[in-house]
Image (cartoon, rainbow, N blue to C red; front, side, top):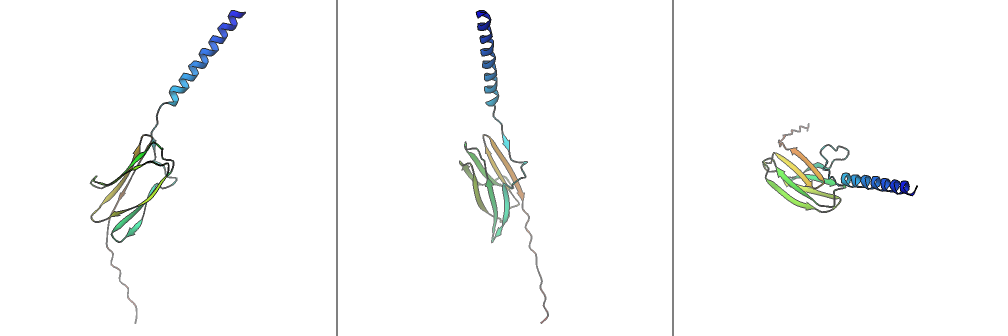
Length: 134
């Protein structure tokens, strides 16, 4: 009887150890969170223009605290702006000079976070005539 109880205890301990190690191994896999398909809230949006500047608003929530990097590029992939984001939430407006610019790309990347949003820019001048009877 004592031999059976000892054997049963060893089997139970072995099963618990095996399940615990499997759970630990599965929990350590890292996953990359992509925000490209998120349409619930706009993360980056065009606000408008002011004089010779384009205004974009960046709203990030639940960014991993491990740190991310924001890079703003023009259409030719030249870096306009680069900054480290070290907070869980990040809200800021960016003003970008629009002289001869045809596109802007916002890239935010980190260990567990990725966001890539591009905007094409087309500028046209409209002439408006107003005629009133005097």
